[in-house]
Length: 315
Image (cartoon, rainbow, N blue to C red):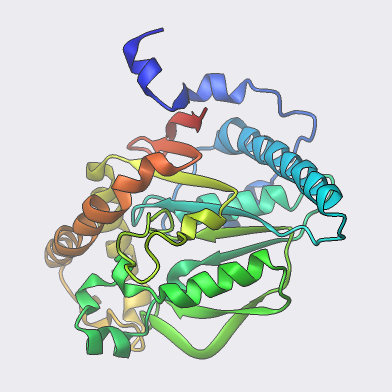
């Protein structure tokens, strides 16, 4: 065994090897139309990746969930109590523009088709951001998306209640059009079997939350965590491409927070997008997101064409 493999806490696989793992017992088929519905705005999915990457991942998660149910049965037997089994929580993290939303939607679609037909909910942590008025009052509007910009107490309370099987929990809704939390609008999470949580900073270790540090971390509530990874040059390209597409569509809406960018010439729009990346997204990536990568249960490493080039599974 080489020093490199000895030092790593992960098994490392190429896509061909990963696709060969036994997962045909519960073969799940998504139509092209269903796959397209899962794609986030301007995201791409290589044609064969649902079968070669996400099918095996779905099967792996099925085994993890089954194992957790067995552990819960042991705890119930030990305590002699008819405790409710809390939802199995899957987190999906990674940089802005890496494709977290597509990964989350695909997994939700595949998991909901397991033989036992589990109830699957999907939320993003965007709803737990402070609203823009609060961010401006705190003087951290330029840090939106950084750990400090989230109402961590509200998010932690939600996670406590999810694990306690509290019914009809309300999750605030975030609008990418207005770039703000929508007042008095919520989605309901009602005791799902599996909850998928997507967010850039869900693997934080608590250092940015001094009021709860050394007590409990957000990631303590996760049963399985996925980090979607890519080189920053690719992330910048994908971010700029998305910015230009939004400039031609959503930004044209007068209600869009970024409406002022709708009529910019392309070269100016590219300059603005790269500037936002450098001053905001790059800093968040380097200081907060990337350092948490190796805390994940599984890492999906993307190449320049959005294709998964490497899969790392925690030993």
